[in-house]
Length: 231
Image 1 (tube, rainbow, N blue to C red):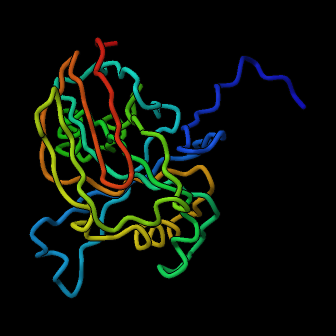
Image 2: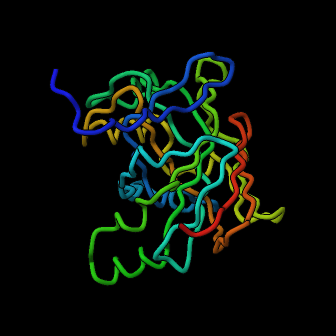
């Protein structure tokens, strides 16, 4: 085997509730515009397909940590989301079979440099600059599907400095877990270690250094992080 030119990056892992093992992260995907509190979209005969995006797996942050405020942005926003942890290969699977590939679930924040995202949209540029930065993906400890099942309903909330910023219910998702996994698996194969964001309920706030965030999803878990100084 050829010698590395420099030290390989350390593996990114997430703790698993009730398990001495850890979950090794491979890729991070997500879907957007997936909450419909009033039920209007879900009642339609044809639901709009969500946009799909990816984030760097190297910037997943374990629970309880501090996330540095990213450079080059004037508006950092959090999005509370349930994240799916894949535990088996899923390649072109049906909705009926998709849940077989799910290892578990966690509470996560899709942190976004919103001003850079808006600028990129205006210029019709790729949106990667808004999603890829150090600490962009805080994730709680994983709850195994074998222990909690596959959540379809339950409150999802985000508090910043003790004040409620986002609130919703998993039942408000336009596309549920099995549908999201099946959809993504037709675009590219999903593998053990892949994480999938499922969208965020309404509510927004601009974060500042020193802010304390507490996210919670009934039946899944909680996530606490602090926004640190700008890097």
